[in-house]
Image (cartoon, rainbow, N blue to C red; front, side):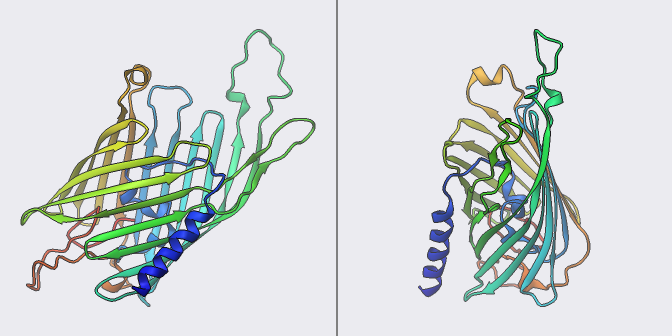
Length: 335
């Protein structure tokens, strides 16, 4: 009961901080690259991993958001600490943001194979406004108010990650400081502010048969002055070799996801999302997202650094491992 009260307190602290926010990228394959938004998931795979994501939103629309992300997580020999980094490049119309963050995670072991991970990310964002990509009509003169600008703002984020053999909960604020990107200069309005945003995800795993598992999960994102987003997905896993499932969101998008164990140390996921509205589909070919995960070498942190979800229904020494949301034979949690 004491630990649940601590969790509730941490959740309330995070939620209380999420006011006046600005929307960030929502990843459909968030379970497989969780440390992009939650530093507490860093280094929880039991081995060093390199993770890459590519997301093209509203394909076919000029200036639509495009996101590339790369991260790495490293467990340490003391079984408590995980470190890593994340780099996210996001291009939307004339604005290009590149985030550079160092990630830290610390494990608090609890009873009954439960773990609480506390995370911190520190770094900053390079922002560029590329007004040369704008098209003007009716004049050959250059508008003096359409000038490009750039800047760098530091920031840090926090997160918690709670795991049990059959359940997980992730809550995070990737960028905590409300910092100004640009200011009013030379009578030109160039003011923009980074505002807080909250990501919360949860899921559990149900054993259907010897080879099949069912894993429903959801992602909740809150941003002030923007619609609250809720992404719900339900996936099935066969013998920890591949996952396949469906997704739907509160905003009206829907699609499918797939994740495949290609070889030892390499895994790949793909998501295709489209709108349920024909008025949107006639201009866009949908959203495509790819995740690639590569194991760098064997882990140094040992099994206790893994956020494992052990199958309690089997007791033999070679019992198959299981996890919530994303699964594989090596019992590695996908960051």
